[in-house]
Amino acid sequence: MSRFRVRFENPGEVADFVTRVERYPYAMDLSRGSVVVDAKSLLGVMVLGFGHVMDLSIYADDCGQLCQDIRKYIAA
Image 1 (spheres, rainbow, N blue to C red):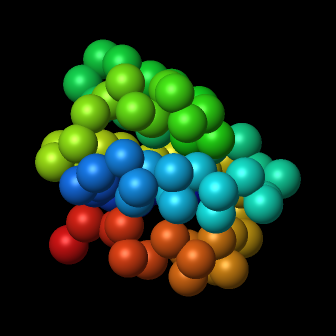
Image 2 (image 1 turned 135 degrees about the vertical axis):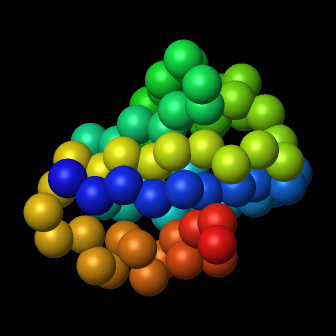
């Protein structure tokens, strides 16, 4: 399992993120506080809001290519 902190500033970034992660067969969750949603669900991710750092959990051992695809959303 891999964990990252991600951040989205607007709906366009969320749509791009979901499009990118849908290409991979891994199960992924995105959480903010006590709310956990499927990271591949556009509506679910939108519910978490914008401008907040969220936790992304990827349930796979080797997700290097996915990490490259979403690197611009990974919070420093």
